[in-house]
Image (cartoon, rainbow, N blue to C red):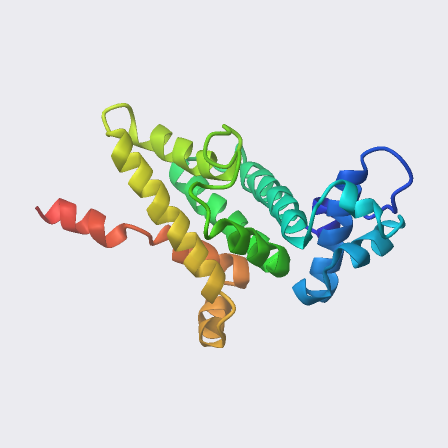
Length: 211
């Protein structure tokens, strides 16, 4: 998913100024990094007066919260896009994980802001956990569909957390040079990601059969 798919690249002329400012912030973030982001820089990028952002955001922190919200929505859209493109639920879970990691690779600065703004909150970002088409719900519902009605909700929740943490860890480590030989062996980055994610739980499954 390109930056243009997350943020509108057109300068602001009329309409939703708040979203135009957020889009401008995302473009600066992806192009120059968090240190270049300020309300004045966002106003300049959006083509509005320096005072305009203060009608919607009291400070940079509020702007970053809005940027992160757009990022979570875009992540959910990217993960949902793989539905209907794979033959079974097991493959779907792998492809959802691949979509997650690829998003983090395509938008590293935005991805970092998403987690930086969420880290000290009492709950997951708004809409992520209770919105049916949100990223977290997508993973949880896929586990529920695969597990069937007899599996307890707490086990589905724990499985969702485990899968999310695994994908996040892979996102953090996928660029390590030590994995380059494996990437070559599996035909590139996407093949390597699929290979790693498809091995989640395999030893637990073998242990269960042995019992």
